[in-house]
Structure formats: structure tokens, C-alpha cells
Amino acid sequence: MPVTAPQFLDKILALSEKKMIALESKILFVDDGSTDGTWQLIKQLANENEHFSGIRQSRNRGHQNAVLAGLMESIGKFDITISIDCDGQDDINAMDEMVAEYAAGNEVVYGVRSSRETDTFFKRFTAESYYKLLNMMGAEVVYNHADYRLISERVLRELARFKEVNLFLRGMIPLVGFKSTSVYYKRHERLAGKSHYPLSKMLGLAFNGITSLSIKPIRIITTIGSSVSLLSFIILIWVVVRFLMGETVSGWASTCALLTFIGGVQLICLGIIGEYIGKIYLETKARPRYIISERTYQNDDR
Image (cartoon, rainbow, N blue to C red):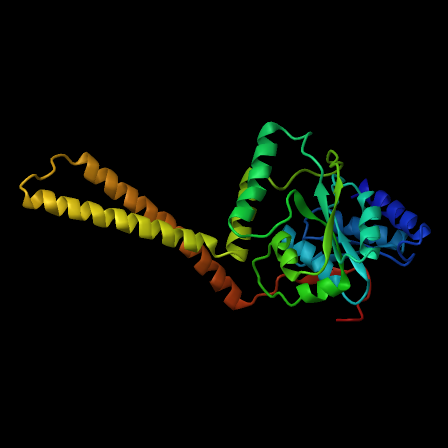
């Protein structure tokens, strides 16, 4: 943040000089319940310059909830909101084109990586597979887009009507609709902090996105279950016929293999069904998706 905050300020001032945004525009930092000195730094920035402001969550609730908190906080205050991480990887100069696309009539502008040439083969392969898997499973996402985007206030007001607790904004915002487009940029090396999305978390986010936005895995389970049941029924008929003919099957290997296979399929199916039941359980509780404990400014709307 100490590295990127001046860059954000310079961009705000540059856009206002071009008359693309108002000079009163703000930079809002979201502290996701950090335990270091992040909140003190945000308060210091807010005291030093009127363009900086911040909110702090009562505890860490995850990246998606933090982004949502910032987006919801801007409703009623600004015409457009651009969400971006503070690590400096996303090119802030793409904001110029984003604002221009908004002026041209687009209410959602997605920031999309133009290439992954700087990634390792493993990182590129897993990332591309991640987006393909999401789309294949029925979660509508923009390829190579994360959470760098421009959203109009009208879209945010409609997004606020989505009440689900299990958040996957990359898939939720396309569901809102309205005219949208994409701008492309090259991603830089990380300027600050370290990645909080290793492969395990990426897989977790992908699975959360699939199960939050699509019932296709349940339909796949139904197809697998029907296929396995049909196969088992055919084998049963074959076994009965062989028994009546007095030609019983000797050996236990084939029987054990079949039972193990069916048992494994059943456990996988139960696991996926359990995931959906768990999400239903969390949704029915209707717990708040974020709780703001502190602000650097007086909020007149709440």
C-alpha cells in the first residue's frame, strides 16, 4: 500500500485533469480485519489527503467479502466504482480506457489480462484450466478476468439485491446483466505483499464458484449414477444367467474391483451433494457478509 497509494492518487488527479472524472473522487481502502499496521496506515493516508479514505472489517472474512464491502460502501456516493487490488500487479493506466468505455455507454467494464507470457508453464496451465473449468461447469465468467473492473452505480444497486452468502463476484456480476465490455492490459510483477492465492486456494475458489452459481455438478452426478446403475443392472443380469447355467464366476478380484469402483463413485457423489447442503445451511442462516467496524469518515447513510 505505501507503494501503490501514491500511484492511485496520481491516477485520480490525472483523470480529473482530463475531465474524465470529478475532482471529488475518492480512493477507498478496505482493511479485511488485518492484524498488522495496515489500518493505522490507512488512517494516516486519510488524514494527509482528502482523496484517501478507508473502512475496516471487524474480522477477516475473505477477499470476495472485502471487495463486496467496498463496492456496497460506494452506493449513493459515486456514479462509478473501480475495484482493484493494492499489490500493483493490475495496470492502473487501464482505468483511462475503462472510464472512456463507461462514457460510451457500458455499465460494466472488465479488466482482462492480454496474455500470460510472464507466467510459468504450470501457472499458465492451471490458470487457463481454471477458467475453462468454470465455464464448462456453468459458471459464467470472463476469461482471464479477476476482480479488476468498473461498475456503474445502477449495476451496484442491482448487485445489492443478490443476497447469497457464498460469494463469487466474478460469476455474480455477469449475472446482473447490463451492457458490458472488456479492456485488455499486461499484468506487472507484484509491487507489494505476496500472493494469497496458491493453487489450493485457486481450486477452492473455483469449486466455490461452481457450487455457488451452478447445479451442473448435481446433474453430472445424476448422469454418472444412472450410467453406473445401468452398468450394474447389466452385470447383475449376466451374473444371474451364468448362475442358472451353472457357470459361477470364480475369483474375488473382479468383484472387489467392481465394489470399490461403485463405492468410490458413491462417496464422491455424497461429497458433492454435501457441499450443496452445506451451502444451503449457510444461506438459511442469512449471516451478514461483512461487518464494518471502523471508517475514516462519517457515514451519513447508515
